[in-house]
Image (cartoon, rainbow, N blue to C red; front, side, top):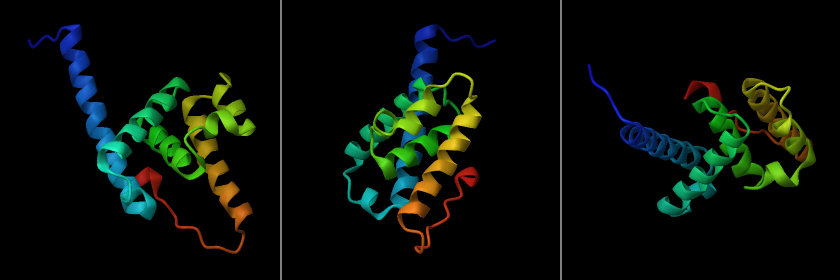
Length: 129
């Protein structure tokens, strides 16, 4: 039986997270033209920071994290601190991580519809990565 010590397990987790961050970067570049203009290492660092922030709110699976990262891309990297509604929901322990991510996705779409009610927004199929 193969056994990994804590250091080896930590290294595997780090490698997995780096690979996931690269996939998120590719998603951002594919869906947001301004993301394509950001140098690769800079974008990856921004994504890693947002993954860490998402984890603080209990958002741990890839779909939940992607919703958080996309929201940060659209609303700003500190939206969770600067926008009271987001701060309230993300810090509320009565919400499950799934409820938080669903609320965040719906809320972000609602904000953009209110800002530009006649514009057609692209539909991002977040659940079908």
